[in-house]
Image 1 (cartoon, helix red, strand yellow):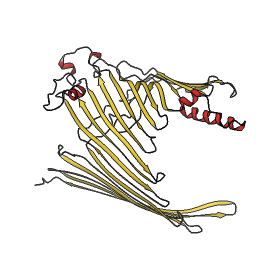
Image 2 (cartoon, rainbow, N blue to C red):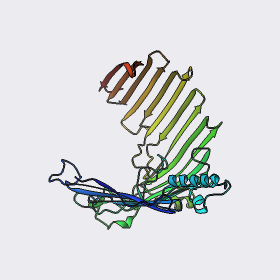
Image 3 (cartoon, helix red, strand yellow):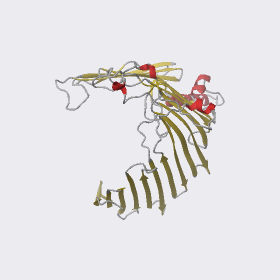
Image 4 (cartoon, rainbow, N blue to C red):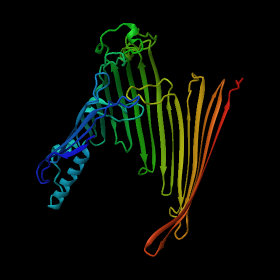
Amino acid sequence: MFPGSKLIFAQEDSSPVQFHGSNRAFGQYANRQGTNSQIPASLWRNDLNMNLTVYGIPISSSFFITSEQSDLRQSINNFRIYFDLKALAKNKATVLAKNKAIGLANEKAPGLMRFLSNFKTFEVGKCRPNYSDLTLKGISVSGVNIEFTPGKFYAAFSTGKVKRAIKPSEVTRPTYKQKLLFGKIGVGEKRETHLYFTFMQVEDEVNSLPAYSEIDTFYVKPQSNLMLGSEGKLSLFENKFTLEGEVAVSMLTRDVQSAELDIEGVPSGLMNLVDPKISSSADYAYSMKSSINLSSTRLSGGIKMIGAGYTTLGNPNLINDRLTYNGRIDQTFAKKKISFSAYFKQHKDNLIDWKKATTTTTAYGINAGFRFKKIPYLQISYTPNFQKTDSDSLYLKNAVQVFFLSTGYNYKIGNLRSMTSFNFFCQNTETVIDTMIHL
């Protein structure tokens, strides 16, 4: 095994053109592959990162290559070029500070620097767009990803290849080439009051794989996903009160080659836009949360519902068929010497009663703390958790209750700082299983 890292080149900070980078190499050699492991016995990886700054404008790139690349799976090698917008903001602030120091307080930063500072994200190559749980999050896109935020205007755009085509073999399933088109537009800054509208389309390319017999591809069909959504936030009284939420409607077509669906009474223009098939299904999801922030009190709560048929190919790991409630209160007294908090959270599935069983998970907790000078501190918490599964033939309940107490005192012995503490932890677990058929 031979890891390594080396600085490529760096110029003086005073130069208008600066370049620096790093390269990290890793390799291993072995004569045996791990049991049930897909990682080969011997491998190498190389991760190259380069940064070029031209008159305060930072351009960064990364290139990763490995011997683990294979035609039987999605690409591991990747290349990305992007503007380091955090470094750009620092460079812009530095320019303004220098202008102010020499008596040019009204002098602006260079025009290109001001223009690029309107971008929150600007990347090309292997991108990882992250916009929301209900729409696009957690997938890689080989293409472009841009967020443009000049003033109160907001626009985001991402497009490219999500998956490459993989032909079937004895050990792999076939995969269609998949492409994505995502757009979001609206007004307002993300952390302030805003309203955005979202469009996303993810689609498999039918012609990216040769035509195989039904016995080879009956379990893999070309899919498409069309989504429309909106999100917004209302912030009042200097962020002391906030209300924000998101709603999205998703239509998933499991086989774009299936027969078209004819729905009477629906305008032809809308039918041509969504192009429903007999394998299509649609559902919706929404989330809403609110908070009140006062000097010594904080209240927050929310609700999130993801329909049983809601699917987004932009976030394939999203768990659907779930309704979640949550609430929390944090309160302090005596100039934060006394603190109290409590929370509640509940999950429930089987929203349309299509499963044989319904599972409900409930968790809540109470915490209290006392920290006064010259007396021992005290921290107490009680956090029970309950899970219940109910069906016609089975009733299962798990209950876990945790109680924790901690107290202690800090003091000096000469020049030494010492602490004596006492901790008590108690956990009680109970399981109830009833296999009697409920009438």
